[in-house]
Image (cartoon, rainbow, N blue to C red; front, top):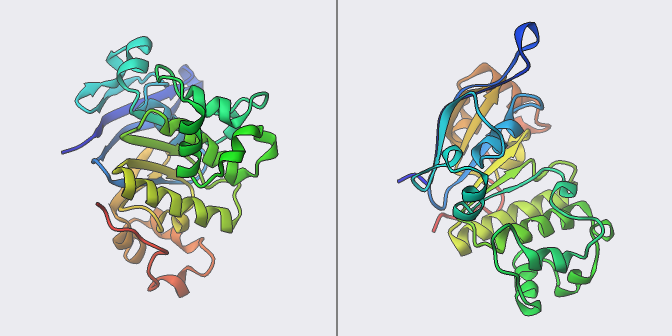
Length: 264
């Protein structure tokens, strides 16, 4: 059984000599309660793919089905209502959080179509992502980068998502914040049986969380497989290059991922 299926996704920008192919026949699947990582260098099409998967980016060709429904055939109004459990958390917290409003008010509002939460419910959601209830009174600029990411995830959790797409959630975080966020994602999957599609340029950090990994280069998936298998025995030259760029990777190749949590 698959929760999300993307088939033959194609997307280009521009026309004529200026036409640029962003997605070149991408296929992927995410099963319930599975954590899938999509990795690749900046500019390879990862963010465009993320927006396409949730219906925010029109496609030239291909189909995305979520829970049996064609995402792009629904139209914006029906999509917001019928696909509430498919959520995207943007790379930049500024795209998710209003700097002029408190965290509590934004979590209370949740996402489009979700009922507004009461104060005790807001506190519960904040605690789910490791933030104290007192954070409800703060504004985004009073939070660290890792705390803002947690707040953005909290707003997405208000609709009890079945699949959370996270675009570069580890970017701009220090190593400690990355580890904390990785453990949070594992906890969400374990406790809520939530599927996650984690988009990143860093194979090292996704090794800690992902069951399966897809490697993207210039708009195409060039390799995919179980994360540990890909880490230990990459088949594609580009995957090997990404792995070789990780400091200390040769020393760490036999080490177990940090705090790996088994699938429920």
